[in-house]
Image (cartoon, rainbow, N blue to C red; front, side):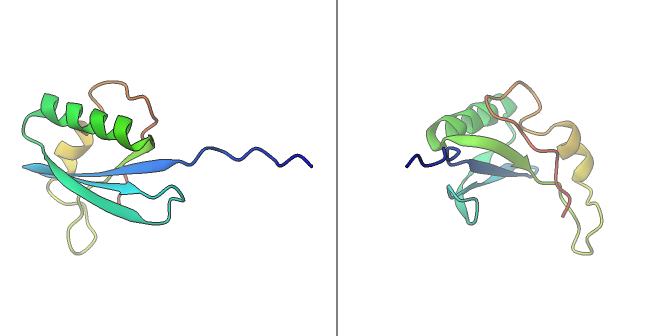
Length: 104
């Protein structure tokens, strides 16, 4: 009996850009749990992009999700404009798709 082909496990990379550093988490292969990784210094954009690319390659990332800062009330925070226009993944093509920024 032939078993149907299953898609390869897909891991997600979640980025939370801040003024000084970028928070990082990687999902498990089922996409159910997020596992924190060390933050990436964010002031040197080129170095941050190299670090993100290294994580993508090392972890087998298939999709990148970039968060948008919200205030405690759920409104758009003051960091939203800079993060939207300068998302760490927006500078050059990535070998995996990136989801639109999330707001919630």
